[in-house]
Length: 451
Ligand SMILES: *Cc1c(COP(=O)(O)O)cnc(C)c1O
Image (cartoon, rainbow, N blue to C red; front, side, top):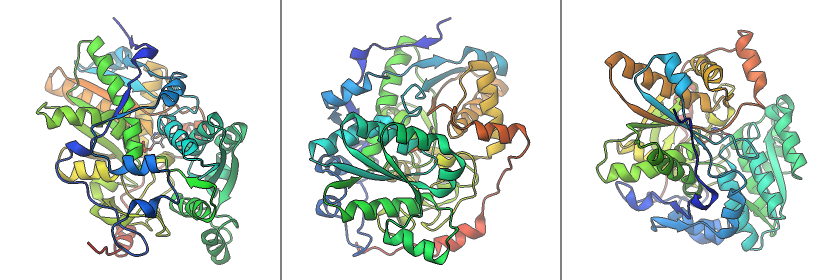
């Protein structure tokens, strides 16, 4: 019974797959947060290098991965695909479960798949320094690593609550040479304004984004980098699904359903978009995004134009959103607490090509523990949402007495999230209901764009 399906380093994909030409309709434009008019490449060049701005709207289906990026990918790619024999047995399901494991990267998640090319294109464009934000630290640690590989300076605005409560990823960033600042900070106007009103403010991802963008716009030598949501980020993550397809061929299999957790949408896009191409060509594969009930963007949000950040400094995009000033409850899957979603994933959900489901954090931790006790790997709390989805699909296959092939992505390991597991075992975790009133209030503040 083969358990691991491995590819050689020479089988690292040579191209990323760009879903834009295969979308069911034209790509929706983004709008300038100030003028509310369509964003032009010139608007974006103060914060991103040209290569990434081009990838944001490219109509090329295949985009070549630079050799320098593939060289660094070799440190952990191709990542393994596992057949979950032990989990299948424990569930007593006729379904075949396969998972791609992205926890093998140096930072422990899928995020270096995009951090490395982002640092590379910035280096090529002459950028000296990167300013970015991080929530629980997964993105900050990935970009700190990538900046180090290309000799760039790196400043990370880290949401204050995580900075104080989850210190180990801060340590990782510092180890790789980044400067880490608790957000809100006194470094930026946005940060100072918040602190003046509320000195005890614990920060949020949207606010940290605003600080990092203000930093990047204010310095000639500095660019900004975003770890999720944007089209170029989803593009870079497609190495996950492209490899998985080859690995499933080794297993002589093809999935009936592909599952990923969804925060900003990048790891889901990574595993699912290469299969969306097959679906567009008529294959009956289901694509399922799993999100938390406490921040149910795809299942309870509206499809509308909204700001990417809290302060309204980054472009307005068409996406599922709970409103840019929505503050989700503090669940442990910090990476899934984003008010919006990837515009590309959103467009596919809107068109009925991608399905979404919301699950509570307690049932996700149940799934994570069952996974760790059978497969061994301790998953990130974010990844546990995908595991919950896969287990539920496997149990449904059992009920229906159906053979079914399920592919899911384990986006990262949970070694730096053990406090969350401690809280779970101590009975200190709670489920949050859908915060309908807060969402309603926040959705009243959507911006109007000029088409
Ligand atoms: C950041 C993160 C996520 C959520 O981000 P997406 O862009 O939705 O993928 C999920 N899993 C892990 C391990 C993460 O670090």
